[in-house]
Image 1 (tube, helix red, strand yellow):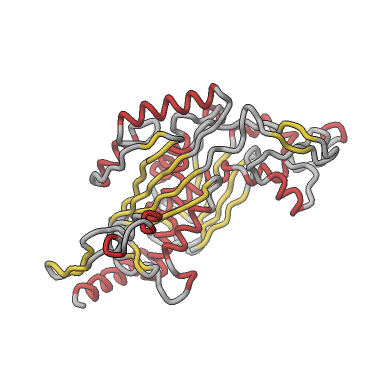
Image 2: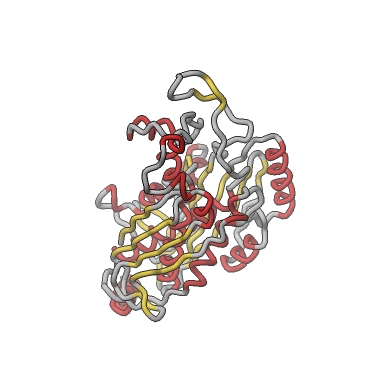
Amino acid sequence: MRYLTAGETHGPQLTAIIEGFPSNVTIDIDAVNFQLARRQKGHGRGRRMQIEKDTARIVGGVRHGKTTGAPIAIVVENNDWKNWTKIMGIEPVEEEEAKRRVNRPRPGHADLNGGLKYNQRDLRNILERSSARETTVRVAIGGVAREFLKEFGIKVAGQVLRIGDVEANRTEMPIDELIAVTEDSPVRVTDKDAEARMIAAIDAAKEAGDTLGGIVEVVIEGVPIGLGSHVQWDRKLDGRIAQAVLSIQAFKGVEFGIGFDAAKVPGSKVHDEIVYEEGSFRRVTNRAGGFEGGMTTGAPIVVRAVMKPISTLYKPLQSVDIDTKEAFTAQVERSDTCAVPAAGVIMENVIAWEVANAFLDKFGGDSLEEIRRNYEGYLQQVKEY
């Protein structure tokens, strides 16, 4: 499978096309839109979330609730477009209107690099596409992928582990309970004491005109042994997941299982011992986070990633005017104080896509029924090994 997205943060809509999705998969559009609603939640979000009520519309590839095998087209309209029709319209504008351009790049954003690379004198042509608003439609894509994974009992959940200098206790509760508990938390944690301190830290950062980043964790349960492959670098599923996570705006690092802590301890405390019980192989622990040799082990996939503080500050940093080359404080676009809880939702959905894609790579087929036959045959093969 593959997908492409198009659209700008203040344009009329965001668009995605998914190609290669199998037929006869039931798509619950309410479940897809639930993922979009989750992305908009979280303490520390900005005014844009009060304007947009993101809703995905599927305009191709699904008929009477099921996929047809044709490309799936998804549209998410931007409600704020009505306030930007002149600035973001496709028609030529008068000279006076053209003066309303962005000429002061913001530190931490793609503005200056993109302007230099694409030879754009109006940096709005860069910031509109590089904005994290693009993740809205990627969450919708992940929502569609989750509908496929659901057919095979694969579940995805996430929790926030850190915001700023406040760390939450990591919880290993059953996945359905984890989903329910974090959904009720404004910062997506299971630790109520940390929740209160995180909210206070976000409020203090907002008052100071500053922003906060953090760490999020995603867990995927029900994944069979053998997704991904060791035979080529680009077929290693943990590598594909890492690339997908780092493609999320503002994400700067990713780890699996015990991750960077593996550098602190001897190998005896890093690797997962193997046992054979009740007719199957399993690992006694899951320090590797569900992967060995780029392939799933059958244990839950455990991925953590760090999101930097959002780059747009209401007390902006110094920048340089691209016209005069003089120092100025950077221009301010509407932004969040902290988007870590929402970023966790985005991370869940980009990983869901990668797992679904690897599942199809492994089991093939153009219809759900064919994939299920291949899957069940493989499970029998593994059982008889």
